[in-house]
Amino acid sequence: MTSPLTGGKERRSSRRRIAVIAATLVFLATAVGVAFVAVNAGREFARRLDSPTVAATGRPASPPVPSPERRASLGPAVTIPPEHSVRPRLNDPPRAAILFDLEKGEALWSRRPRDVVPIASLAKIMSALIVVDRTSARERAKVTRAALRYSGSGVGVLPRGRRVPVEALLHGMMLVSGNDAAIALADHVAGSERAFVKIMNRRAAKLGLSCTHFRSAYGLEGSDRSCAADLAALTRLALEEPRIARVVRKREAAIRFPIAGGKLFLNSTNPLLRLRYRGTIGLKTGYTERAGRTYVGVVRRRGRTLGLVLLDSPDTGRQAKHIFDRAFRAGQGRPRARR
Image 1 (cartoon, rainbow, N blue to C red):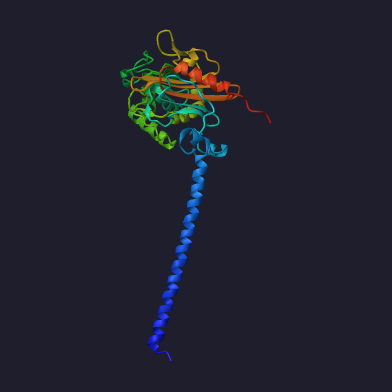
Image 2 (tube, rainbow, N blue to C red):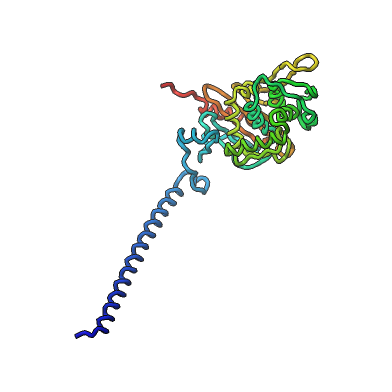
């Protein structure tokens, strides 16, 4: 008969054998799971390596472009597909650029679209958005002392202390890139340019423009910075504002103004408007030594509206014309089929 002591040892030995078997089963199950994940990860990696983008660039393909419904929910942001549908030939390309469809919010071609760089007077696009949001077309703004202490380009004939039409200042800011007009508008809207710039930066943050930061209402400061993708988003917003759209499509303007002769004559700095490039409807130029020549152009043909941002371009007019020519020849300007 087995003694109680012997029986106790046998039970403990049995429990140890059960524990060892259970641990072995857990280890085997874990190993099988890891192997399964590794195999699937390997297959996915191999699939991505076989993609055309990787074959051409050595990098995995970008995430798929969002659906139209998803793009609509993203606001003014422009999506950048992994493949370009337009391929311009530029011997001396701009530092950064993006060509995009304003309605769809999709890039057709881009070059370093998220590089953060100085933007010069393209900052005035945001200034214009703030102005039309916080003023009426019938308002009048006082020409402040600060507005007359401007540097760089200006309207140049603003009468100190007089109240002038906000729309006239908007024309002066957007057509001839008047820094004096921009400061006068900033003082009118926010009480000071400094307070106005805070509004600009809050709006940029609200819109999710992560590349963008302003230090002035007019863009002459080297620290006024953005990227081509953010400026494309601002362009989409600007052309949706009737007051801005009416101004920036003009090659020249004669506006009633309290100066000798009673009218303010302005000529747009937009190179495509000056060239009378067919379908041009805006938008803005800029230049500083640090930023180089910057430009946002918008052209509408056959039911399609395309926008182009050029940052630090050697010749904005020539390059814009070439890129738009290729885009419309490639069929990007074809109207939608009617249902």
